[in-house]
Length: 444
Image 1 (tube, rainbow, N blue to C red):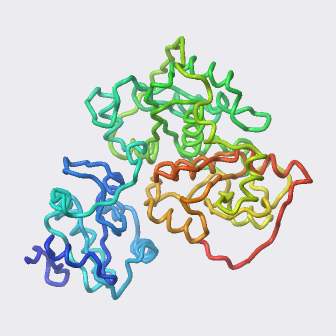
Image 2: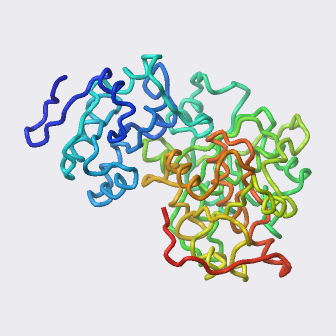
Image 3: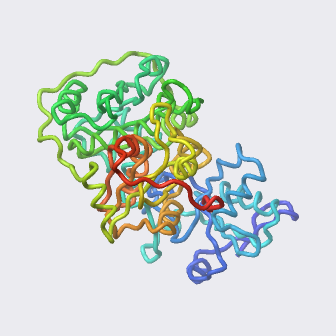
């Protein structure tokens, strides 16, 4: 083994693949992946033979170090199990990204830090070494992939049947006009939802919307939103929740029958921060004559109140509340247009974020999807597991759609969104409702 060329006070040990192989089962060792989360999820960003990450590794991209203070770095690492007293092995694309994170770890007082100097590509090149990845990682796309798609570059994960990029939000075309991804069309969620109850529109209405936007069942659709500053007491706070809107659209388009629906991780902001251009050209869709299949094709993606009650009554099913703790306790409805407060009796709390329009519990510090093993671990602790029939609900289906999409990425088979959510359930006083709960419940 060699020592990296660092100042003596910050010297890190370099560890070989042979040593790593031998220590895979060491319970005191923790691997930290310093690459972008897209690479961690499964995208081979630098021509690696295989994509993914070392089994059990936690994700902490070195890029976060530029914008996160030491105290927050320490908190995040501790949350991921990277604690003092453990042996820490950092790996990245090469030496530089891993060493940058390793140096920060030593500065924070970790005294058993090692760097895999060969980088992840050497590990991926050995077919005898195990890898984990997000099962449907290709449905969560990254800016470079979208840029290549727009530029017409070939991709193994794109079927080549035509694509559209859609800028999604709730009734704010001015946001699209202000700037959007090159070639993107505008999609208003009001075209997908009925404003009376915010449930998905009828099959005939969805059919008309998709044809008007030039979308057939074979179209590859890439969705993204723009998250801006706002608060829950605005008249229309949903206008601020662009990425949640994008996943809501992904749910409904998948329900309708589009075979290849993708979401840009981190949305508009992640695109811009990666140095990509935007345009202000207003793009008009070119309608198509046929969708190609009957709508809906994936009826199982969305359940209504009768099925929600069946899930509550079943031993092998769970109805998951993707709402804030205050909503769960019944201290607030979470919405300025919903009066009753409380929760569906018998549900399981799945958390979300600070209010009905934010999803911090499911996002990383750069607003991309939280590493999927962390989401799965939190769900498992609450009894939310892939062997069950799982339906997510929130107020009107937006936050639930984001968690549904993450379960979909993980390859879970029996997942849905209860479309009516708290809005529908609370409107009928005959439906069982609970309030209160453990005031000091842990919020992971």
